[in-house]
Amino acid sequence: MDAPSFITEYDRYLKNIRSSEYITKYYIKYLEHIIKKRHWVDSINNILIDDGFKVVLNNNMNILYDYLDTYQYASGNVKRKINFSLKTFYIFCRKVNLINDETIDEIMIVLKGTKWLKTYNRYIESDRLDEIITFLNAYYFIPNPYKIKAIIYFMYYTGMNYIDIRNLTRDKIDLEKRRVYLKSRVVFFNHKLKKTIEDYFNTEPEIKNAFNLTRHQTTLLMSRIKRYKVKKVPVTLNRLKECFFIRNLKKCKNPLLIQTITGRSMKGLEQYYEKDLDKLQKQFDSL
Image (cartoon, rainbow, N blue to C red; front, side, top):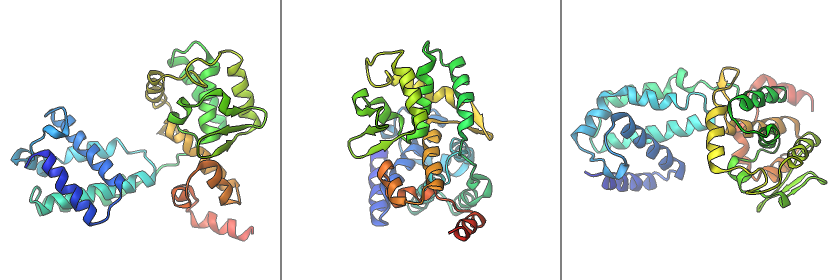
């Protein structure tokens, strides 16, 4: 069986069990991970799903461990998606006789393990932002220190991802009303961010986009910021964005407001809600 046939069969299997699209995303990533570790070929389409592939799946648990390590500090929501994706993938491999019963039993034990499923406190307090910015200014090599601060503050206080920020132009940012106008929603921001944006805009004219952020600079920023850790967990651009949801869901009593400014459905916001029963009890008692 070649890879296209394997993928076609697996896609059909996923449709039969009515799995969502993210399952495909993570199993493709896992196959790419196997290719990289085994130094086989340069793309999934060139894999031959043969006896060699069976040997890898059955006798190389380290490949699975390495893959899980790359997501060690991911959110609980991402880990649940990966778990479901890998379980589905390996169950299918068993159905087409690519792995044996002993291997799948061992894999299921790993995926249910507390070490892998352990989640970390991903929230970053606002007073740590300046430390992160100082670190980045030392290693990022951008002459304008206001630029890094503006980007980090913007992600932290608006919850926007780096792709939206890179596509943003200054005419979409209303400093007077403290609003960002996007295609599908309007994002509000506080006075602290307003001052930070004004400081940056006063030092650099708009050339490419609102923050003159190129694709290369984004990639460099993503790789450098991971070297800084808060509460033993590496800082990522996605983690900065998550802080916006966590902070506002704790403070705001109106879920509709959060939905409006984030563009997320209630289901999409579930992962950021408080789940500690003792804290929930205190919130209930304060009503």
